[in-house]
Structure formats: structure tokens, C-alpha cells
Length: 366
Image 1 (cartoon, rainbow, N blue to C red):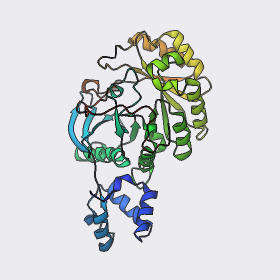
Image 2 (tube, helix red, strand yellow):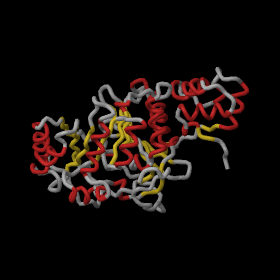
Image 3 (cartoon, rainbow, N blue to C red):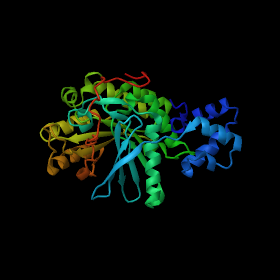
Image 4 (cartoon, rainbow, N blue to C red):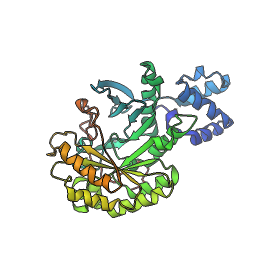
């Protein structure tokens, strides 16, 4: 068994501790981080400001293992989706969404998902395991390298959204390490406002993230009453809408300038009536909130259809009229099954199994 540690499992603090255990000063971590994240170098022999002795030792102790890209699909709108194979043969997907002055990367945090939201393709395929920190941050590192290879916007990811496969807050420890690397100036240097974590509503995880590393928070809400939300998002049976909104109120106290984004998939005849818009308006009245209305992207065998353009516009007008900033999200990448709710690797392992909502690799949040 390979006894090497994977460099991409470390954030700056844990890398410093590792180097100190080797008798090296903490500034070595800054040098190595700059080689890997600023210059894209993962060959230790090329890190010439490290001593030759240290390079030999690191070569024996450290690997730079990354997911392997096995397939790329490109949408007519410029969106790119990659299928990646992990070291154990499992597969995940990530999506790159280009805009005028932005490159947004949608990354996965789990192989599959345990939450079984009624409208989501990822939930249909079940849950296999959590990703490691290296498998999460490796997605960002690989995407930047591919952008540089194609000379797109100087190879710079400007935004990361944890909205891919999986529930990030059920893989808290690995996700936190990856987020710390994303916002570290010596690594990717992203503003915390440009890193968004989307959750179906793991209340203890929201509270913990607020204390550990508050980034932009997005809530997959999708309903304005508990009965409907419990049908669409079964997690609601454990953490009700009132519990979830209370957690959001606590979260914004850590950044008075921030606002929580509420994602609301528009399902024809299910959650899209004017009365439901008024109900949602009342729920969010005392929160600094933004609402993304998401036209439903077709997923086979769910029985759902998207609301009409006219219905979505009426819903949006009601919320905007109450002073809640509401936008209709433009669908991107639906022709390659890369749009919201569509990620589900065709090569997903058939022996994967549902291990129960609340399963977490570090056992910290359930």
C-alpha cells in the first residue's frame, strides 16, 4: 500500500504542521503552495527554492494524486462538463460555466447523494462515499490547468460553487479543508463571496460553517411550506423550514453585508402558484435574501415538468415587488445534462448503495 500522503489533502495550516514534523520551518509551506497553485508545478524536483535534501524526502513522502478526466462534453452555450474517475474507480462530474467576465466551476463533494430529493438525478443514483479534500480541491486545480491549456481567460477560475454531486455539509471536514484552500491567497486566492456552498439544509453544518469559514451560502428551498418541502426534500422532515431559516439568520450575523441565496426550482403545478409566492415572500421578509428561480431541467422518471415562462415571471414579480431581489436563472448546459439537478454519472458504479441521510465521513454533522 502506498504510504505517501496526498498533498491536495492539506490546507496551509495542516501543511505547515506536516513540514514542522519533518523539522522544516513554516515558510516552506508558502513556497510549496506557490509552486503548486500559482505555477501549476507538481513535480517536486522542479521546486528549486527547496533544498535538495528536502526535495528527496518529499519525493518519498508526498504524492500529487488527482482525479483522472475520462470524458469531456461541451454544450452549445459554452458550458463544459467533465466525467472524472477516482482512484477507487468511482466517478464524479464537474461543470464549468463561462460568462462575460466570469468562469464559474461547479464542483462535487460526494459520489452520488444520500438525500434523495424528488427532482434530482444525483439523488436517484444513491450514495456511495464522501470525497476526500484532494478529490474536491483537485477538481479546481484540474479545471484551471485545462483553462490555461486552452488560453481561456488566462486560465482563471473566478467563482466556485459547491452545487455538484452530493450534499457538502454531510462531508464537512473534507469540504472545509478544500474551502480554506480555495480562499487562501497562497493557493487559489478566491474571495469568500466568490465561493458558494449550497445545502439542502443541514442545520448544524450551517452553524459550524459560520464559525469556521463563512462563505456565500445557498439554500435549496424549493417550497414555502413544510408538507410540500418534505415531499420534495425529505431532509425537511428532520430540519423544518423554520429551523432552517433560523440557522440562516444566525449565519448572516457573521457578515452583516452578506445575504443568503435561496434556490427555488420551478415545478409546474407543484410549487409555482401566486399564493405560494406570497407565502415565500412572508417567510423571507426579515432575512437579507436573494432568490434564484430555476426552471426545472428535465430528469427522467421524476414526473416533474418546468413551470411556464409566464408563470415564472409572475412568481418573480411578486417577490421583487416585496423588495426581495429575485432572478430567473438562465439554464446552462442542459443539452449535455450539465444543468442544475442533472448531474448523474452514466458510469456510476452499480454496486453503490444508499447509506442513509446524515452519513458523514468525519461523523461530525448528522
